[in-house]
Amino acid sequence: QVQLVESGGGLVQPGGSLRLSCAASVSIFSIYAMGWYRQAPGKQRELGAIITTRGSTNYAASVKGRFTISRDNTKSTVYLQMNSVKPEDTAVYYCYVRDYSSREYWGQGTQVTVSS
Image (cartoon, rainbow, N blue to C red; front, side, top):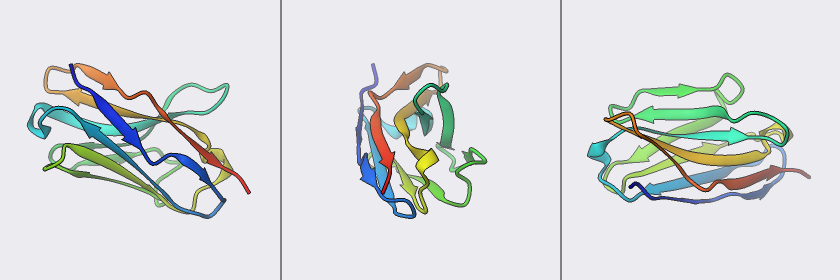
């Protein structure tokens, strides 16, 4: 069972920056992809950004150019650097992991609120 520990959420002003972190309890070598999904009030959960073990990335159109996903293989940790945030980025952000057996794991979620 993979445990995911998220951190970095909070309140940020429009145009500001925030960095989310998610540490997995297993070796990075058992993980195919790590990423972040988000769910705004009254909306479905959607992909924010994802990165594979090989470094391939995929971003939602709404965050491309503003958010950057990266990972530290030595720590089995994935990061989401959020720049130029907007009120519509307000959501609960969930860490996501998929292993090589296509099993999926989710973090508990961290709240990000963009407001002045």
